[in-house]
Amino acid sequence: MPVHIPTESHPAILKIEGMLHKIDRLQLPTSSRREVESILVRQVSKEIDRALPWQAGHGRRSAMVALMIGQAMALDPGELHALDLAALLHDIGLLTLPLRQAAHRGFVDSESYLAIQNHPRDGSRLLEPFSFLRDASTIIAHHHERWDGSGYPYGIRGRFIPLAARILSIADAFDAIHIPEVSNHAARNLIALKIIRLASGTQFDPELVDALCLCQESIPVARGLFFLKVPASPSHWLPSNLLREGRPYNPEDEGMKKLVVKNEEVPRFEVVNRPAPA
Ligand SMILES: [Fe+2]
Ligand SMILES: [Fe+2]
Image (cartoon, rainbow, N blue to C red; front, side, top):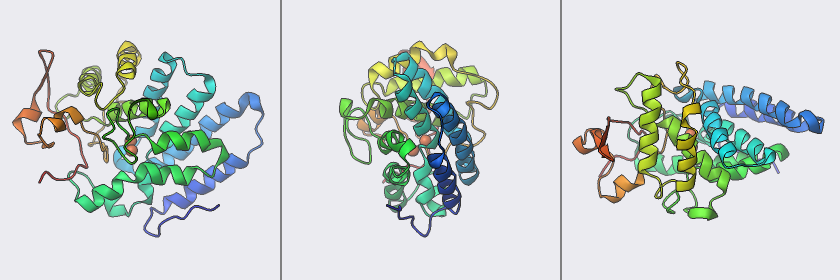
C-alpha cells in the first residue's frame, strides 16, 4: 500500500523513496545481498544528509557505534544488518515534517516538539513497505523509547523495547551530544560516554551502556568523525535523570554547565530542539 506523504514534506523524500524502490527490486544473490544493500543504503543516507545538512554524517556515525555495541552483544549477522540499515536511516521521519520544524535549532515550540516526537513513527511507516527494510523499520519506530518508559512515541519500557532499538538509542545519543568547549575528539568521546553513563538505568539499558564502555577504545577519533561543526539538531536527547531532579534543561543553568559525575567534572554540553522551559 503506498504511503501517504504529507504535502509539506521535504522534496528529497520522493527521490529517496525512488532509490529505496530500486534497491528493493534488485534480485541479489544471497551471498552478497547484505553487503550490497548496506553500500546502497549508505548512498541513501547521503541524500538524507543533503536534506538535513546540520546533522550530516549522523546516520553513518550512529551506525558505526551501533554495530560496535551489537557485536559486543553477539547479535547474529542478520540482526546486525537490520541494525546497520536502521541506524543509517533512523531520522528519515524528520523529512516528513514541514521544513521549518525539521530545520529548527535550539528550543522549539510545543507544537513543533509534538510533531518532532512523531518522527520515529513516520520514518517507520515510510520504510515498512520495502521488504528489505521491514526489520529496520521496527527498530526505527522505537529509537527514542527510554529504558524507564518515559520515551516516545509509544512509551514502552525495558525489554519490551526491541534490543536493536535500545542499542540504536545509545548510538544516536552518543553522536548527537555536542560539547562546544572541547575540540579534542578523544576527549569529546570520553565526555560523551560519561554523559551516557549518567543516564544508564534510566534512559538507557545499563547492560548496553556497559557494552559501549567496554569497546570505547575502538571508537574512531579521526577529525570530523565525531565532532560536529554545528550542534546536532534535532537530537531530541536529554538525560532524563536530570529532568527528574526537577530541573528542565537550560543551557544557561549554572548547574547544567558543570555536572559532577563520580567526582569528575563534565563540561557544559548542549542538547537541542527541546521545548522551552515554562
Ligand atoms: Fe531521531
Ligand atoms: Fe538521530
